[in-house]
Length: 455
Image 1 (cartoon, rainbow, N blue to C red):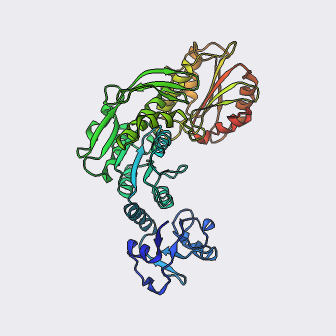
Image 2 (cartoon, rainbow, N blue to C red; image 1 turned 135 degrees about the vertical axis):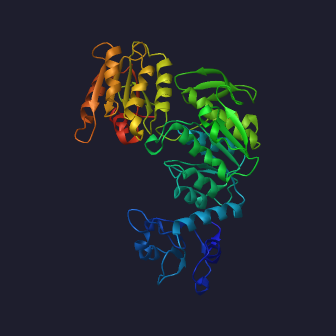
Image 3 (cartoon, rainbow, N blue to C red; image 1 turned 120 degrees about the vertical axis):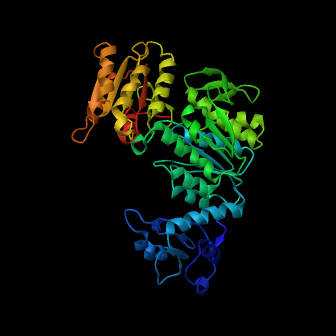
């Protein structure tokens, strides 16, 4: 990190005289005092605990200076709001380092698309991306201030829990190009409607310059909120960008797009990933990455773990693990993919479906709508686990033959996870395939591990 004590003080508008301290070059920035090392800048944020309570520990660990909202007996930069100062510092640092920002948001697929864009751009530029789930008002500035000094392109994921979240992140990062992967139902508990979700996602344009490129789904739900100052490039059915000639395999995709010549090979399943790869390819072309480099990057893609990942069970069965998160669109897409994959010779196809969280008052209804994606002709057994998914389980019993549908409860008073685990283990044979899909809090990753899964 190329910042000094005096420089930081000037950027954040220090309310105290920092000239009494040494103007040291700072090594890095941390908001966790346990991660502070010699020469760091400490940011005391307010959460479950007030970070100001840990300033003394940060000093013991070697911090050169701390931000603070109150006077301290140690080297400090006095500000009104430490979080706002942190964010302002990130904005300044991007301008200082002349780093171009590519921003990604969406109700589904944003992390996968971020990974793909990073791999494509890294063939040609020094590129860095959001690490883990650092995609909020704290994680985004942290990512910016932790990027390597030589970073030319920064791929930032932007998350949304409430209306206005994306506006803040966009005005901090000021992306030159942005992608919205999907206007879905994620976090409906915090929004009035899918249209309001679309409104929030489109705030990614708020920090963008005029004529900057914004990739958006061709979805009428967003029409009333489309920005007028950016270059809008639509994708999906009827859009500007199209996936064509898609061939879907058990663990790979081959397809073409309407703006590049030749096949694109992707070593992951799910036709929705072809759309994500198409977006990454278009971003690459916009920024000058050669077509051959785009295809090479996607052909050797490695995605963040637990996102549509084929694994092997200890007994040899095939596991399609998609347990990081879930919303109705994502569950519908993975069920569609799993249903179209041919069964192994003499094998059955099983599915474990768990609750999708943060769907608000519509949750039970949205779970029940998954019935259109469940077919006895494609699935031999379905295990349902949770609370809001119970209605879907009841519907499934009306369509599937007896002994092919199982429901295990998880609510405030009861958790039948152990029973679920026992039934799945007993049912899964070496020649079978099994899909696991649910929100992260439903702990299906524990079930994946219990099956003895290996990558």
